[in-house]
Image (cartoon, rainbow, N blue to C red; front, side):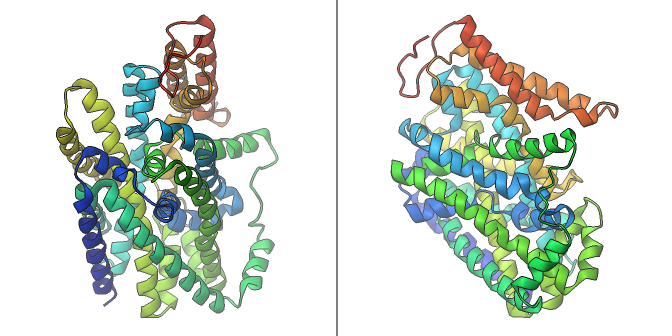
Length: 485
């Protein structure tokens, strides 16, 4: 019964996405929805950027294990990223009328930097999209009472998301996300209301969390603990700024004002509403401590991600179960569709087109769709073969962009003296330092001293400063005119 009702909801979601696909007539429609989206849709899409499996399933387990300290990267770092992008980057980037963020690196620096950083951006999405696919497999496995193996659930979920993303691109992502966000907000608030009554009210839940020291930020007492805490925050808050999914939502806005405030408000709403599933997870501890303790203490593996679904399946009515799993699937699909489209169009526009510059709009559209298929197969394979948790997949995702892409983006937008040599050295120094650090982190004697992406960030900044000091060919300002040396 439950599985059948959820299946009906999936069919409806696919139908909405396919109807929206009728608006796609060009590559620009496919990638940016023709830059016609209103404030309500942009805000919903920005909110949905990271409100996915990590927020509902991963963060719940992280909070129960580590308290607020386990949430420093997400939702705090993720929400801060969205607000920073809206307030600082949305306006200048929107005015450039680009298709992808990779186009910015080509226009501001050169085609070589565009190619390298576009590959970095694509690679960074492997873990993020795989986390959503993993969560879909988990949901289908639980809905079917394990009749559907989690691996086959991943394949089924990937196929559903692929179907409407493949045909409709950003139009389908926008329309389905708007509908799904309504389901998410209403569904999670309803389930939380039911769980709150079962846990004897907010005061009981909060008092329980205070007694368990769950509001400790987790900064620790040593410099090493503090460094880890800071690194986790900045990896998400800064490393996810040079990302195509964030930029794509901004760039699809109907005007500049929507681009700025839709993104900023979306980030603020994300932080606030991300607290709902975290609170819901803690009500589970009050309602059924034995179940939660068993799952939360199962290590870093998949069992801790089952806390919320298990609470609903074990203690709530069939109506509440339908509402919860409908909301959960909406959460995952809305995030998966956007993060599946972003690396695919980056690869087609900034990698494939670099080797075939004569490609016309129609050819770019078909290459983009073909890349969506290939990337779906790739991330599904990664999800099937990886033993990392949803939380771990997401945390790892933005290390490469923090080390290699953040400094070139910031300098390119805000510093007229940034030049091609500075961009090249920033990318080279940042990525090489990060790679060396990732190798050294596996050496036990020095592993506690290494946060590779942070060292890569500083190395990238040094490279930019050195390149500007040495001079060289002037880069292009965001407006397209030569920058002064």
